[in-house]
Image (cartoon, rainbow, N blue to C red; front, top):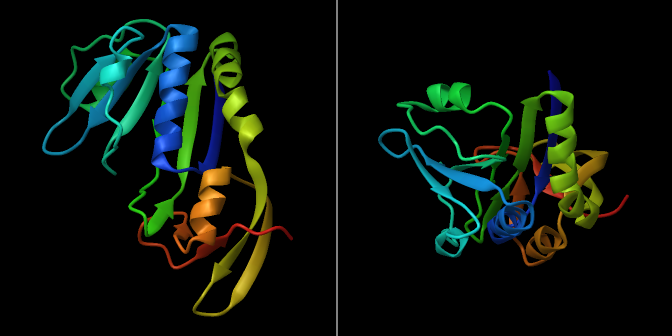
Amino acid sequence: MTKFGIQFHARNSEVIDFVKISVEKYDLYVGLIHFISQFHCEVFDKHSIDSFPNVLLHSDKLVLFRSKPIMDADSDYQFTGANPDALYIFAGFDDGELLTESSLSAIADEDTVLFWKNVVKPLKKSFLKGAWIMWPSSGTRRFEKNHYYTAQARLAYEEGVRITQFKQDNSLYLLEKE
């Protein structure tokens, strides 16, 4: 098994656009997994992607599949086990005041991971790179040269949106060059 993953800051609308474009371009399926009161997954393909929501809840997870997923599952664990080789997408929290980190990841055979890397390549090529991490309580700063973010995340930062790794985080990302 091979692993692939990337963490980045992006507006949720950009994550949704990436998913929609990927579904249409590669004839994929996308599962929108909700964790409100119980496990629930809605599946969309290139014929139904226009009805995909334009807003994500923070508890939602997106999963891209190369073939139609097996839906017989009562939990995320069962669903993941029944549908290996998927690309998992966690969109960060984005409410206009706070933007948290998003991530993409896959654990699969080498050929499948290579496929997912090719799907993600246009998104990754659009990323800006390098950010300061600051801890306001101490004023300590550290530059992370490999931190990825989109131009829209940078614009949000410039407009005053707090950029953090997690929702309850005491560090801030400063999307500025070294």
